Length: 467
Ligand code: ATP
Ligand code: MG
Ligand code: MG
Ligand code: MG
Image (cartoon, rainbow, N blue to C red; front, side, top):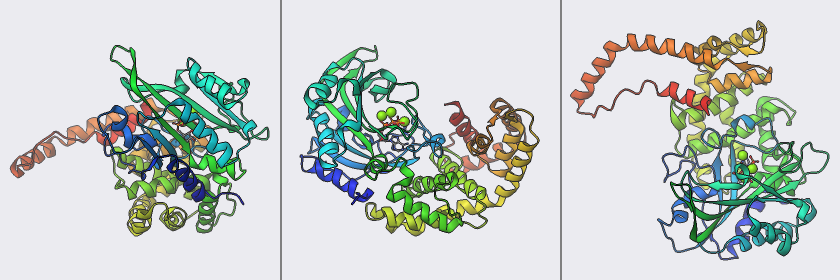
């Protein structure tokens, strides 16, 4: 029979374990070692210091299945959810790592052996990309592995050169793609229509071989390393012979639960899929200690929850529904993530409270938005409307943008910022007295006065839209 998601994860861990890799559990979505990173967005995050050489452990090879969130920050796939078959806000990244141990040759042959011999994927459906100048990797693929030259594509820096930051470890990467066949739209990597869902990137092998200096110079690392990442859901789609991540076992079970709870029977419905995607990021973020708030990580969580709740409204759901999906999620993922099972009721409570709070203003806000859309001349929703929804009805800007996009509309962000500034000035003038009073209290308390943080909420929203 077809391998289930849970079996695929296990098979990956076993394969690399039997090749000398330490099995390391997934780390939290809130990176413990990097305050500049919004969420853990790759398997390598918890190993950063090992790659940098500032930490040494008892092992030089590791394997993990890392929970990742890509919503906000450098890798933001939130806007892709509901629009591609392969992007989620939350996904699991299967990865094997070498910390100055093996390099390109082994990394490539492990990947090929796992895909074509353990999982028995047809070789003629696999394509690979290498970095333009990486003759070494290209030769391994063609001469040692035997991939035909016309399925080894050389690409530039933006897709095939990885770096940790402006300086530090970096190097070329090689990505493995699967061709879902001509019934799916899209072209091979590097072609003009590569963004379609036909040729899907399943695995990225990063070869860390340089240390970039502040001057820009690339100095070879004495002991090059390997960092790989493969999306479990994308691999499951391939193995289960479906063309969308939403059709894999794990998502079908979540979608069926969502269908029952919302009363919608079509599990291919886009809103239902968005909801099934969002419950995973939201539940795991809460599990990892994030709570909805008006700034930073908490605001990203709030935005995702509210987006999901709005999609429920779109489906005509009138009762609280989102938190009820946690139960189905625990059934799917509670064995791999025991904490999720243990903390189920806490997770449900946090999600329920946020949903409840938003439910108070959602319907009125939606009526205002629908009215504005109906009366609109042109294709741009006014900044005043966006601001009013944001300020009075708790609509994060990206939620309004999500609705607007469904109507092929965009938002007047300059107008939004102007409205925001006007209100900010008014608030500042009105709060002079309060601010002075609060300062007095802080000083009397003996708490350190570090300045007022009233702009945080706005700053987060603006930062998100300035990316
Ligand atoms: P893409 O080009 O498809 O956006 P990527 O190059 O951004 O993928 P990487 O950063 O290389 O992805 O991450 C390693 C692997 O993780 C990818 O090859 C893919 O299988 C998986 N992956 C990346 N982003 C997502 C996502 N948003 N949802 C699900 N899987 C993902
Ligand atoms: Mg991407
Ligand atoms: Mg890519
Ligand atoms: Mg990639």
